[in-house]
Amino acid sequence: MSHAASPATPAPVPGPPATGPQMTRTERWVFAAGDVFGGGGVATLSVLYLFYLTDIVGLPPGLAGTTVVVSKVWDAINHPLMGVITDRTRSRWGRRRPWIFAGALLLPPAMAALWAPIGDWSSQATKTWFVVGAHLVWTTVASVIAVPYGSMSTEVTTDPDERSRVNVLRLGFATFSAVGCTFVMNWLVNEFIAGQLSLTTLYLSLFLGFGTFFSVPLLLVARFSHERAPVAERAGHFSVRVVVSPFRVPSFRRLTAMYLCAAVTMDIVTGVVIYYARYAVPEVRSDVFAAVFALVSIGLLPVLMRLVGRVNKNLLYARMIPVSMLAMIGIACWPTNREVWPVYLLSGVFAIGLAAMLVTIWVMFPDVVDDGELRQGARNAGSFSGVMVLVRTLASALATFATGLVLELTGYQHAQHGIERLAQPESALWGIRLTMLVSVLVLMGTAWFVARRYPLTRARCLRMHDELEVARSQRHATAPEQAPFDRQVWDEPGHRPGRHRRTTRRSGE
Image 1 (cartoon, rainbow, N blue to C red):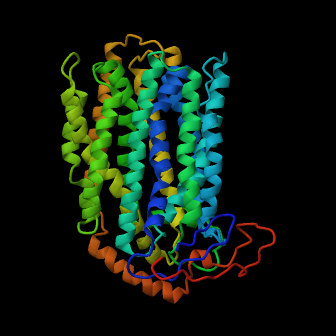
Image 2 (tube, rainbow, N blue to C red; image 1 turned 120 degrees about the vertical axis):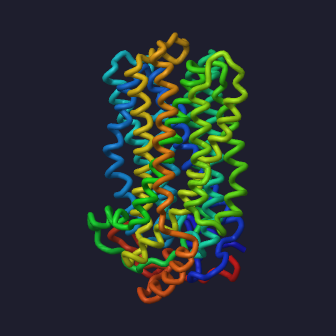
Image 3 (cartoon, helix red, strand yellow; image 1 turned 90 degrees about the vertical axis):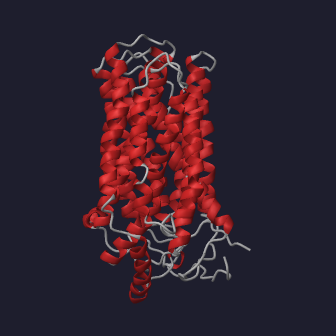
């Protein structure tokens, strides 16, 4: 029988690290399902948010992109700081799960503010400031969830092969959520533009429907998952050096560059495809485009699951990039008033390379955290995760800003409330096409070159696992859910260090 943990009841804690599977099947699936927010939350923004700001709220494209960038100034502080906080948290539920639980409860209200239907407000300045404030709330709540969840992905098991499989599984959920949300978002936009969906219904779908879809799995993660990577019994003192410490690890610097390239590519393509399908090649349906991407991405996951324990992960990341670049040339240059089935075929080819990049990054991430622990003598997975989440949000902001700026400079005519299909100048149509083409060629080309020199091969990762076992025994590390409570970080009246139960999990759980 599995012993579950929740922020209401102290739980039996995992036993010491061991080689071989350490998670039950239920725990693996529950933890993996939590990443529906990681995939879908980003997809909702990249697909619809710029369109929402320009064609529903009524902001000029340049101003819309700028509002997103302004909120990212806070993210530069928020995400790394959240990483340090979770690293220093000591509680009977571990370091990560209390934060995931709190963030899941705050998520629906944050989404209600983010998608508020304020297009009828008369003051442009008021709308602009509301958008900035709502985005600040959203990014803060997203950080409270994403940083500890990303950290926990390196700690739910200490077995390297099981960890890789769990991360492929969770990224399967993230991919399914991303493409599913992209498909639903495109459908909602098309129905709204066609006048078949009211603004109120669209709003309720966004914050109630998606808010529930994202929150429930996260609550289950907080209830049923465990942290197993040993940590020091007492948290170290806060230092700015801890915040920037991930960048002192060479493998992390290279992984960050690879992640940034993949994430910006994904966000630009998914954000521009609505404009591409509406204006550049009107015969294309953006929801079909998203469905093709979904089918290819999901079909790729079993292949990656089989290969991840046999092949160097940087090869899985980079192998299909050149083919995807060629496919994007065909998509961006496809003429109007032609049969569009080749566009859908090319989108499937493009999806193979991009999906492999996005999935493999987070399978490589735990290896980089191991490398950092060996080099620095402490497992600061929260700091590493905080930087990764920062990179992801900066990628989203950069994509939104760049797309909005290009549309502004090329003369894009934005419609009020998203109903009208305004005639676009030729310059705007070329701006849409070239935004997709140039961004893919530059970013994916850069990613391919960076990945070729990634240092953590499979053989090196297996050696690191053995070296970590020795290093942890010398540091007298303990399981996170056995670590003494740290009042300096987590203030809980009535609790005393060492008074929680220390129950050994049954064999095989």
